[in-house]
Structure formats: C-alpha cells, structure tokens
Length: 358
Image (cartoon, rainbow, N blue to C red; front, side, top):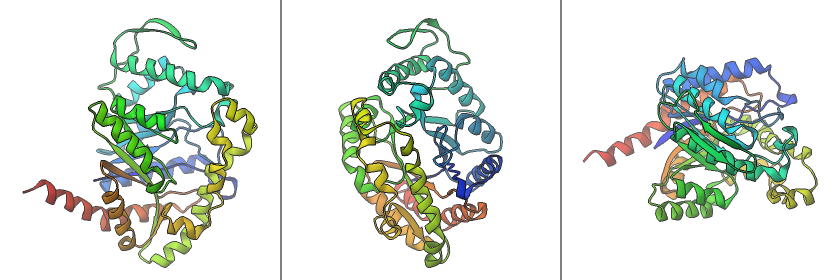
C-alpha cells in the first residue's frame, strides 16, 4: 500500500495567508513528505475562486518541487482540459515530465461548472471540448506527428516538442459513471477525491472494475482521505473542527457564481443543480467524523480506519492524505505527516512485506 499527500490550497478571506506564504509552506511540506517516504504529492488545477483553491499552475509547482526532492511523484487531480489549447498543453506536460525526471502523472476532467463563465467558454461546449482535447492530448503524447479535425480544433501535421521521456500515467474520477467506464476501457487509474466516504462510491468503483475486466486492464484506485492527527485523540477532534468545517464550506463556495438551475440542467450540468454539493457544507461536524468524511484522532484510532478501507476496497493502490487546511499552522500539517509516517504507515508496509516474502 502506497500513501501520498493531497493539498487543495484553499485560502478563504477569514483564514487568509499571503499567497507566497501558502506556496512556500506547500514546498516545505512536499520536501518533508519526500523524506518521510510518502509516494506522491497531489493537488488540483483550479482558477478564480480563492476560497476553493489557488492552485492555478500545478505543473510549475511540480517542476520546482522536483529540484528539491528525490523520490516523491507528482500527480494533478485533475487538469481541466476544456480550459486549454490541447496542442499547447501537451507540450507543457512533456516539459513537466522532463523536469520531474519522469515523476509526473495527471488526471483529466471536464471541470466544475463554475469555471467556464470565468474562462469565457459556453457551458454547452465544455463536454465537446473535453472529448476533443483528450483525443488530441493522447495523440500528441503517443505520436511524433498528428492531425485532427473536429468541431473546436482543426490542425494538420502538428509536432509537439519537446517529447516526454514516457507517456505520463493518466487518471480520472468525479461524479460521472461515464468517467469510470472510460477509465476502465483506457486502462487509466481512478481518483476518489475528498470528502466522499468509501460507501458513497462503491457503485462507481464496481463500474470501473467491470470495465477494466472487459478491456483486459488492471484496476488502479487512489483514495483521497482528509485527516488530522494528534497524539491525543480528543485534542485532535477539538482542534480540527474549524479547519474541517471551513474546508467543506470552501468546496461549495463557488456555487454562488453559477447560472440558474434550469440552465445548468439544459447544458449538461445537472449535478450542480441537484443541491448535492451545497448539502456538504450543512453536515454537522460530529457526522463528518462518525461517517468518516474525515479521519480525526490519535494514530492508533486512525490506524483502524486505514485498515478498514484497505480491506473494503479491492484494487486500492494508494491512500492520499489531505492534512493541510486553509489557515492551519504549518507545523500542524507537518505533525500529521510525521505521526502518520512514523506510527501508521510502517504497519501496512510490514504487512505488504509479509505477503510478498515467503
């Protein structure tokens, strides 16, 4: 079992830090995670909504962090393909692969409904742009020269340079069953992002496993889990409450910038009209803990939760830990990384060794 780190980079007004400070702390957390044996560092691509995220250029972050680390891999969860010119984006992927010495992988997605008005992209074009961009991206990473003719992009004899050292591993996820079918068909991994308890995505993971089997691919599941650790479990639960509640609030904060529900439904974004996202911010803290939207407690308490997820989720390859929240003191994030790597991670690494060694 591999364990990674996931950061959302929220920066709401009430918990605000200077943007440069946020990035400096993240860089130090990546260096620390590399030294502590975490397998990946993960963040998302997101623009314009500071309370949700200020992670506008994750590939630049990874290229910088790669110069200060040795082993940790970098994964974006995910790049919003309709925002990019795919021919240009492919070249940026290749550069990131080179500068990270092959330690870069990424997820792709259509993106949240709220990003498209800010990017001056009609909502109704987003799915078409995603499909075309994905096809172009795959061609660009696999073929030295390619052509493409579609509704939004028409190019002839494009040579994307530089070439990546290898085609980076691709992931997807989200709320759409189609994504899980597609991932199984193409042999991609899937990412289960916070805050979704495992029980909420079991059906989609079954769709993914079935699709993998039908197309001869091996499932690869990464589960992102929010967490807060302290030696004293009760103190952890008390300290974590404002950070966890703000995290939930930040994840739904851009909803206020969406068009009408009728327009969302008519333009293929019905999920955002359903009220499902807004309901997350209304979940009481005790329910977030009891239903394991977030793991908060001592290492011994959380160790059991890790074990349960591993047992319940076949084909799980990695658990990525969200342990940095808006406004949280930097040392508290480092403490959670330390406690997990020293008191939880070794138990599962030993179990793996026992299985592999006769």
